[in-house]
Length: 267
Image (cartoon, rainbow, N blue to C red; front, side):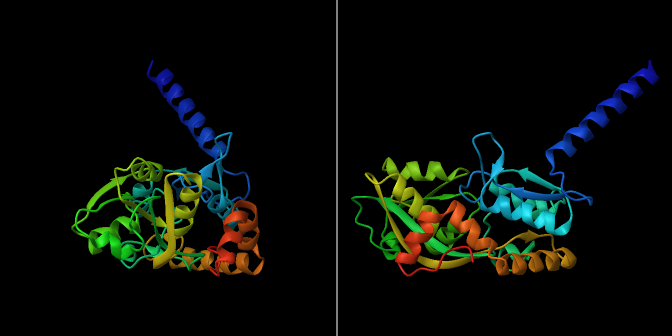
């Protein structure tokens, strides 16, 4: 019986290993490049109609893995779990529209930036709020996505405001749509998209009041991998990879930002 149990256990482990391998890209012969992502942020990190990872960040990850000659393994998780997963070695990189901040640099390293954006505001269509200064009035109710720079900024700069946070940014949008929150603070491009999706109930204050940049998160002290990632970003930019992804996933947004004299986010 002991031998039979040992045989069954080994068989189960072999099947599990095969299943994990099948989830990774077949490209490359090195160890899998495990990249943590929150796949709830279209069109950057999302799932297509078949449930497969898709978006700007996913295509970047695929190109990076191919550049490094390693099979890609995307590890989906909630945004708040990305940095802990990197710190514990459960992923090799984070590529999830993450802002490179001084606070985050205390625990992880970052690559060179690949996107440049800022914080903007979604408010009710008939709201009296016209700028970030209007949020400083007493009694304001705000919402933000958990573990984002928006939450950090509100906590530091609007301590008297009532703040409700959610793991899902669409829940934040609904707080504004349904009048439970005066404003939702998030990145500029998302605010533009949510205002466009809810034109009868919301409007966006799109001029960023805080400028930010996105980069890949890398484990502290992993300078070799950081150099490889930076070399990839430079080459991808020179090959107009970012421009092509913008045309594919963000054509309307790109046209709008350029019409407003605002440089496109990924460049």
